[in-house]
Length: 376
Image (tube, rainbow, N blue to C red; front, side, top):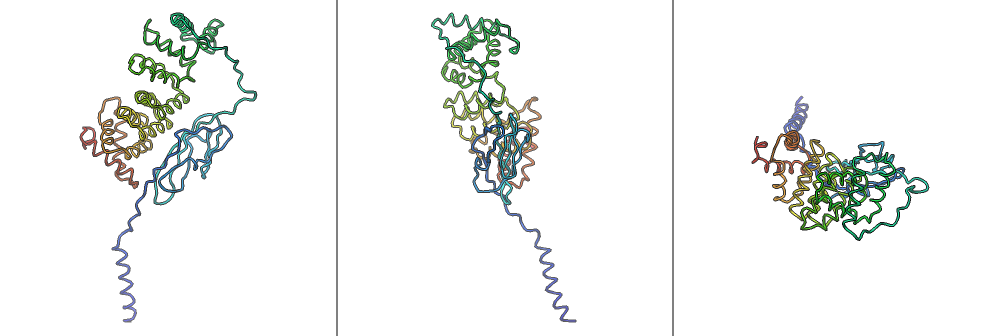
């Protein structure tokens, strides 16, 4: 009897100790900040690419991969992406290794294979170089008036001839001539005619138009005219050109303007990637401000995208974090839904198990307390 009691007492102590010890503390989650080597990767239809070779992180970890559009680009669990059909898809790599966290996205641009026999476009004649600026201006204006608001799939013989004549002008002369027409502003619809022609014919010359902007340094009207030419391009190809220029141009004023152009591609993962890469390497304060503000516009109200931007803000200097908070601090009716989404996301992240996300959200909220929307 006593022997049984002696056995029971230690057993009871063990049970009591286990009950009072409480749950074991979870190991902290470490953010590894994965990033793809490029915001956009090109892939030909029917070919594959190992995305793991394009990922960089602060620690070697495992990932799970997901595609936003498997009909365009599918991805295996091992990170092998396949170009299925021409188009664009976002691939997200999420850290799956226990004890680590992080997420990165890349846009896969799938291009169709070239048709057998190559291009069917006829070779253009030797470019025409004008010696008389007045004649150049007159010929460009005649062509613009003829083609203004026309259906390019149904051009008459005369309209097609005018299009060919304009496109056969030395390209630098043509672009400079179009810029000059916008600057002159006579008649008042001149800019609209130039933009209409540009959007149908000059998307392949975005880099050259951007060079006009840089060449016009010190000429406010010249730079405005170049920007008016650039802003009409809204395609994926245009975004790719804008993003590449944003990351490579040495002209801070051009980068400032390009950030605005990229910000018009709201919700586009490629636009977000370009801006994140730009803002983390930017050295000019003015350009940095526009890039950072553009991040907010592109992220919109999507929680996952907002979190990506919040994590990015965690890498800013203390001064830049305050400045970034300021972009979220001012409110107007047109931004009500956006700001409410950010406020909800920031508060929810205070309970996040991801240290980097929780810390970045806390820092932003502390900086935002001076603004009425966030005081409570």
